[in-house]
Image (cartoon, rainbow, N blue to C red; front, side, top):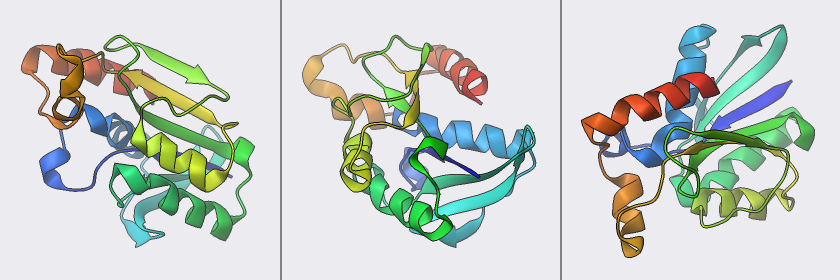
Length: 166
């Protein structure tokens, strides 16, 4: 069984922001494979189903980004999911807008959600899909950049990336 997690922030005010690329990808996967991500448990919303013949759990932690690892570790412990069966999808400012990178291991960089994940899992050796959102114009504006609404001209670039990630 695979656990596929999309990182994001749970409240409506954060929808349609760069920081919710993980949630957006989970929503696309859920729709594509008819998996309802509506069960509330493990500090998250989740659903189970089949993707390409494999049983999966789709998870959107509801803890806010900085505590994402709390939700993930609860699901992993409950279902006895091995680290090699974990896939985490999230936004990355260090990658050009719309570019997707997949890695089997690596650090958390400046991403607070990934810092929480690494801290909870006590390893950096898990698969991650990083969706490039690019950098803000001014380096000290990172927070407003990731949680600010996406301009219309940028939206289609990021939508293509989330569809491709799914």
